[in-house]
Length: 260
Image 1: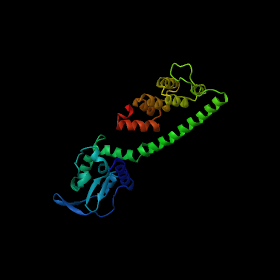
Image 2 (image 1 turned 45 degrees about the vertical axis):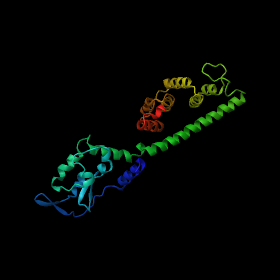
Image 3 (image 1 turned 90 degrees about the vertical axis):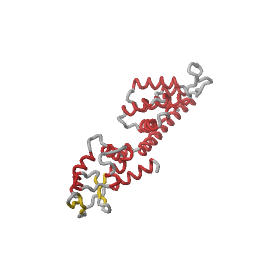
Image 4 (image 1 turned 180 degrees about the vertical axis):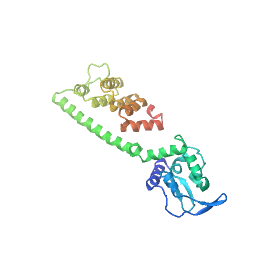
């Protein structure tokens, strides 16, 4: 099962919810006397404790879904695969299983919360990225058409014979973008011309004026292949930049991706 299938299965279980039946629970021998599961334990642990009727045992939903990725936990696998049945020690064992804020149980709980939080889910992030890409493309297209119209009306050359950094025979298209402050289009044009120095100079100039523009930080990351730029984009956008989220997430999975 690949990662996407595994996440879909986990999300299905979480959406389905806990099985906490209202019934007369059977007795089993625990120590010197017969004991049974107590229904009020569901009230004490409403978010994770569930009961299996067929096995007369209880489990932790959070750890069942994510424990293999987070290692051992107090109580071993009893709340994950074996099923807990020691009703005599239940209150203490439940408390030990939950543990402190850094316990495996809490890590699994946070993993479940992240999975169900749509804004943090990678499919939603990619969807947002696709929408933002569409908007950015449309903006550049409209600006490019306006520049083309202006160059045609003024009979200006779009591109010169020599577009190198020191050339005095450059075309007018990029210069018009800068004069009209069509910064996104100008930056994109420099990237297409593979003029890295000019691209970085323009981006840094714009960042000096707009240091909280996450799109500029992403553009700088595109040019420099520096993941720190995408981290900065997330910081200034208060973790809302879909473009930075996707690229930073991918680079965390494969640190060599930005170096290729």
